[in-house]
Image (cartoon, rainbow, N blue to C red; front, side):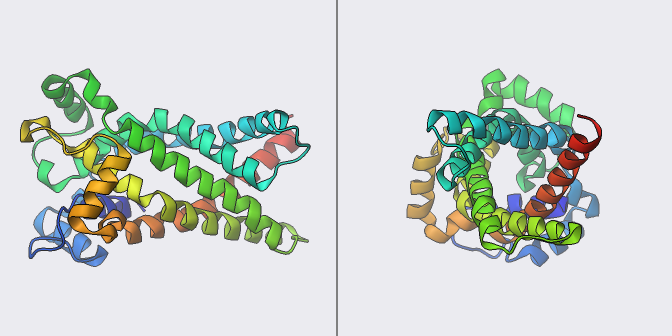
Length: 270
């Protein structure tokens, strides 16, 4: 699924309302990258997300499970409610964002078309960012990353709570897997729809090179307003299709795996 992430980044970084040199679709992104840069470019920048993927997913669900009881005590509730499910998701997303912001920045720099040939690899990218832009550059886009993960996790976990309540209760193990996959996939789609504008802003902030002058914006809301004003509201959803193709089904798989692993651990290790 990683090539979809590369396509998403390339589309999000396209500034303007169209042009002959701009990508037109996912297929166009893939075909042009393979033709102009080589198939290996579809996996450019994969190391940073691989390194952070397991900790990120663990933090996502562990934080969600931790914040749930905390909010129950805070609001004197004996069960998880819809508002509490959303608040725990948002809180888990904020926690997760702090961990992923810097690896995301390095990944974006490696994926961007304009940086082709500038960085030899992940560590070379890290060294050059530090040498040219300083240590603080690794925090660029942190605020927009917090928005991105808070919105996705709030939408994801909040949706899962509601969807599970609407679906018929599973009577078998296979039925339970199907319910979890459906709830997770729908939750992933809703989360992606909510957080794509913040992802567009985050991606552009993190790819900005100070050698090209001061950035137009450094935080989410001013960035979203500027993009909508200059390129139209639809520009805030550039890269949505490859993103939702990855995170829709991915949300379903994520929930299925989490439920399976935690059930196994409760039954065999606790």
